Length: 128
Image 1: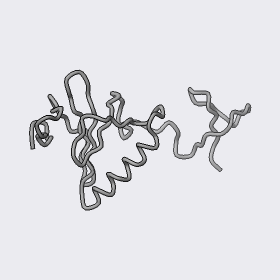
Image 2: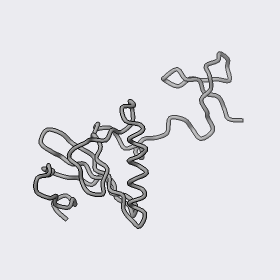
Image 3: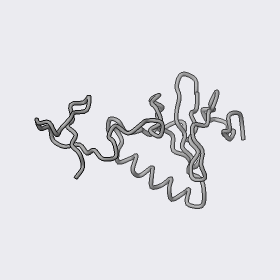
């Protein structure tokens, strides 16, 4: 392993200036790569089903290419057995609280005392 927990890359690639591990589990390692002028996210599936997981995630991301709010694949640099994504500098979803409590569901906007609204204007009602 190289500096920051990233394997050294082959010559001719765009080697990271710095790399920080964002998340690591038995199934996945996510690393933020600091390149000259930009940052990328490298996701490496791990474990016995890593290749199947990689193919599945790449297929989904290809279908969702260009959709706002979806992580976008980058063409270069490519790293073996990894998914490389644009780093938008957002927060990890794991670090965010859910906007709805466990007993609230969104409903079409209605007026009335039983309904409240979220900051977005979306109405909420108690689950029954």
